[in-house]
Amino acid sequence: MNNAIESSGLSKSFGSARAIRNISFSVDESEIFGFIGPDGAGKTTLFRIITTLLLPDEGYVKVLGMDSVTDYKKLRKEIGYMPGRFSLYQDLSVEENLSFYATVFGTTVKENYDLISDIYSHIEPFKKRLAGQLSGGMKQKLALSCALIHKPRLLVLDEPTTGVDAISRAEFWTMLGKLRKHNITILVSTPYMDEAMRCDRVALIQKGEILAVDTPRKIMLGFSRKLFSVKATEKYRLITALRQFPATITAYPFGDSVHATFTGDIVDPGLYDHLKNNGVTHVSVNETEAGIEDRFLELMNKTA
Image (cartoon, rainbow, N blue to C red):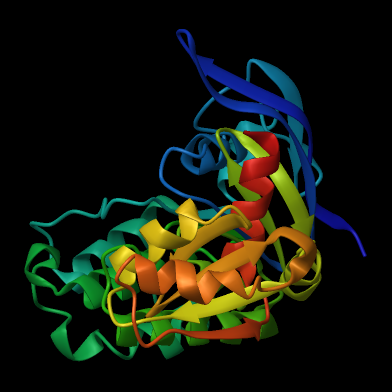
């Protein structure tokens, strides 16, 4: 299988601030590849380099077999880009936005309608509505339709579901899955760890550096200790008390519980008395399977 993206030693700084450092990775054709990390991790800078909008300070990236610097004119015709912020014309209607982007790339909505039909059908009944008057989920679908209307070989999505309701997020990922039949490579970034499970492979990124690259399952299996889910009535008091316990290595909030690791991978019998003495009641402790977020936090601690 050929590489849709091949990066080696990419670095980029803005003044004294290093945005990305020595980034190397590859993405297979027709793969859904995710960059997972918090705000400020370097995802947007990296995506702007890949989409030829920024020049790297060091290293290179080949996209669809072309150099992102010297072949930028050819590349831009083959890339669909959906930036993090809604960037369409808010004073144009839905159909006007779509027609405009089709015209820019020398095509028509009719010519490539089959590519966007699953997505655009959700908003087509509102095609006369101004883009600025759409809901968050509808803006998302319009932006994706505009990014796809010229039938790109690579689709780059920078945090496409940030600020969108849970139902629209789920619908969006279902749509991405359906794009596989069109042999489009998808590069997506997200701060949501649950979305990592929808990707073929993911790269965990923090402070401009890649911490790990693999399938979501293999990354989770890389967690190095036994993990325990601890629950109690008052979670904040529970976290504080756990972090004060001598045998605790890590304790992080996770949903309605706290995920904790302990020295020797066992729960010291003295833990229960310690929690009770700190006013923590109705405690339950159970071993649990590590998720992407747990592995991400573990890797962050190793590089801190």
